Figure 1 (cartoon, rainbow, N blue to C red):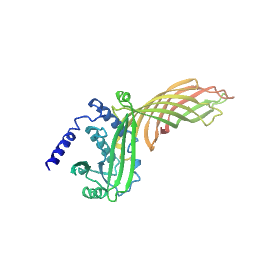
Figure 2: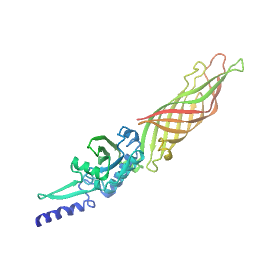
Figure 3: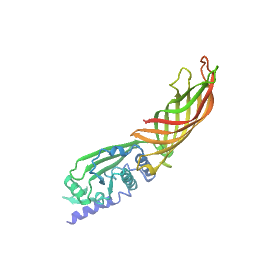
Figure 4: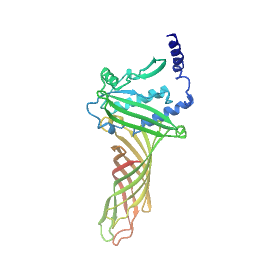
Length: 351
């Protein structure tokens, strides 16, 4: 008996100091900010744990308990980072509006026992039957198992939702993001690229030479590519830089509108709308070059999610009325007016 107690004390002493003593390969304290920043960016990404991914879960699943089934120490995740990950996962689940999160203290408990001169470290639920009993005890409909790991600047979080009544696997997902230390030093910005197609309702006018009548066309089609950036300074603000090409596809025999627009934009989240739909507001300003002239372009509107990687912009475009030059057409003036206020409608896809 004395021999077992001595062995237990010898083994437990190093275990109790593991949080303070770095394991082989564990990042030193000065690197922990990198782990914290890396997992923060991964969990704040718009593609992580989105509401649409949870739609197909059974309606009977309402009360969910988080269960960490990884070994934090051997996976090199400091306690502060471990708690931050769990808090952000809980917030994401709560923000979905369909789950009640249970604070399961038993899910955090680690058991240490001596069995035949061997030290065994285990969680409360050592088998499926114990997990079902734990679900009954905490009155959970499901457990969200999670673990986190990092390897060569790749941050990974694995999630599994299991029915607490019959251990049936309901949903699983892996999220990962690879970054570099240079990106972290620059603020750990998140960058996405988007392809968009849309329409402006701006009008163009061209007078007849022999009468007071005029030809008119309304609307141009816009194609573009956009770079979107989210910084760690404020994850509710985004900045974009876009290159767009526009032209008309109606009344081509009288008008040949074509040009490019270079635009900068600020996009802000509207948290008060999250319960209804994830809505953002945008304000943009650009410089358009078209038909031997140029003008500023002002845009304002709202952005709505379309599907997982898509979105719709709907707002107002204002192009100050300018004198544009048209190709020669018999009986028509070679110049005319283009511009004004109009609708702004775009469909975008992130890649």
